Image 1 (spheres, rainbow over the protein chains, first blue to last red):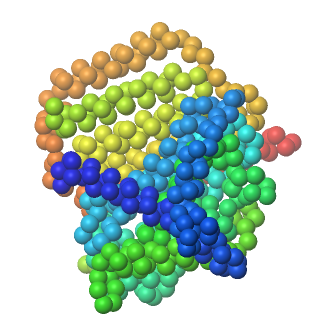
Image 2: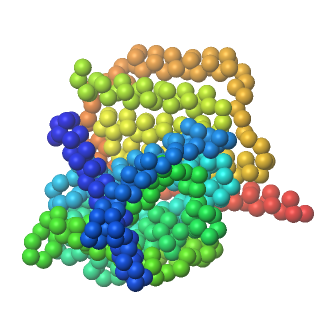
Image 3: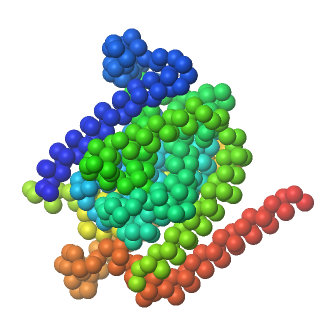
Length: 321
Length: 173
């Protein structure tokens, strides 16, 4: 792949992820509306308000751009860019079909988790440079939560890698032609559970949305942000959700493998299914207390993830020669 | 100019300017953020030179882990002391002399040593940076040193815990 070709493919990937994310926000509003017996967005772009994401984007672009006077202006402006860029970088390593991936290296899984671990720095910078007590408390909570849940997240990501014996997403997809990892007895179910729970905590989604808790912290680390800079954090959150859904479908649900036909369409269907599951969780559970959040991680998810990885390793060492 | 020549120049300019910003920033927090950017740029250099595994680990451990730790420490100490930690740039000239002498010594040894020059010629040795090769050498060939090293780290963690605990007892009594 030449330099120019890779560049063009990257732009296309970036654009399509942006488009999908814009309509995921619309889908979330419609789905949430249905779950709560409302209709959701309706007026902008009849029928079903399909122009709503575009209207939202225009509104955010037109809003006043504020920077706190006593904050750190440079870092305040850097933080949203950091979060967005890092969130998008992960997609470069995810295979969308069985043979197309933007950056073709044998370390996709390592790179994906490496870039994921950088997001917390951006959130920290945002909270600190705002010069706002709510934002700072939120940033400290986020750091405690994201750093803690990174451990079970990586432990559960490692299970498919250990079962296959490779860090390459394409090998993991290829190995699941004989059986998706979610059907692998015990190990598969435990690791998908640990993965989804810790990924929700990483993305500050609802059972774990302590960093953003509206009733306690106004809106968390992004409280001083307005207009497009606020939209960047919002975008980063949805890109993270999309990445989690996509990763689940690739690592545990067989990726492009499926009945009748094979290919990218199955990846899309599975990703959407996981996304719907995440939305369902959002409207079904209450926010955890901070001690419950820590307890769940250190006393349940991390030991379970370690045990699971141990069993997967035993199975792998018995099956490889 | 081909892109193979352009990329190291761009990366080098970025790396040098971010490193300068780390030293010249007035506030510790800014220095930490620029240090994160410097480490990410170093990782890009590793990718460019074909050491992809090293680059991934650099981002995961240093830019992700160590920087988070540093920022955490800065925030916590700043809250405790309730004063902004400002860098005042004392003794600029000795620091400049020391760092530039290290810089020129490094350049001199890199240019004069035939072993380092021979390393620079072989761009991609076979099996270099492949995760399987690395796993083979860590977990088969060098298993004992690896385990001893992990024991050392464990001892460091336990030692840090003991020190922290003793401090607490003193302040309570």
